[in-house]
Length: 330
Ligand code: SAM
Image 1 (spheres, rainbow, N blue to C red):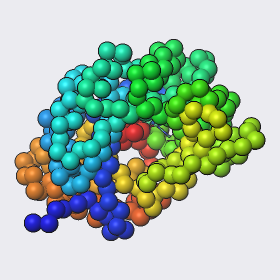
Image 2: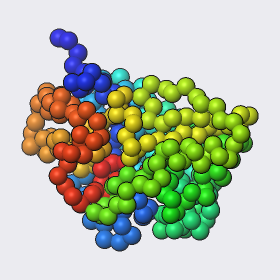
Image 3: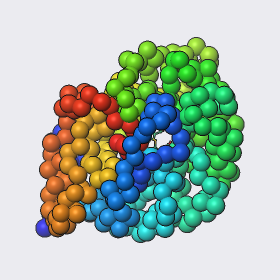
Image 4: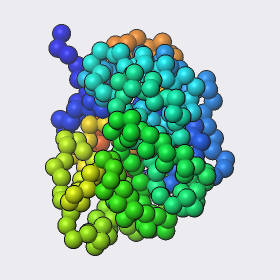
């Protein structure tokens, strides 16, 4: 029988799964969730590790070759390391990566390596302790920064994710670019998206172009780098610097044409676009006794109905109250 592959009607193959293992987080970043009153999922509503493994196996059978572990904060879920170890044995899975806020403890580093994980994205929006606190509502700058240095010295490929808001951290942009002078890391500046768990969102006053122009105004020369396939960022380097920086038009949505991502939330919601409603809930199907082939059919059906881009997906999303990114699976 011909191998079934997750391909949408525009010919885009979805081979990159973003798998959320929890909606909980130890930070309260302003762009992601309110300071108080988050209504986190009950433990019984989360996919168990066995369910996550079973579903991941099905995704891999349907052509997924890369899984990014995200959340919420993945390292707040108890038992995450043994789970990653088991996940790494899945047939067809070529790469596991992790996105974290950098509060992972140092003792996780050796097991991460053992599970074959080499690439970690750390979210950090300011290099200034006070602004870091204002953004995350947690006083953890030192531990996050030392985690980044430790990951680098341990040979991980590190990307930093930095959400830019004109009112919060524009003054951090150049210090972040300067970090790439001495460290071989990649800093990515992201446009803020309307996923902060409230219905309030100020339409962007700084977009990917403003970020680029601001950086260009500070350096006489910027080298444009070749984009990797499916890259969401436009990437650059300052001549002579060890690292590079990228700009992600996450709100302007300029990269949907090559998007290869599919998302599974910690409670089983499947999204073929971050801006759209869930296409189905795989946890419910599984717990209602669906067979493996019924789950495959549901996945293929969901992918066949995928929107052309994030604008079309948003039009289908009737919910006015915007979800937190920690619920969607960042
Ligand atoms: N807790 C982990 C972390 O902090 O990286 C993983 C989950 S977090 C939701 C994943 C990524 O989504 C982070 O890089 C975060 O900055 C980004 N993010 C969350 N809300 C966002 C928003 N409203 N706009 C843009 N990026 C957002």
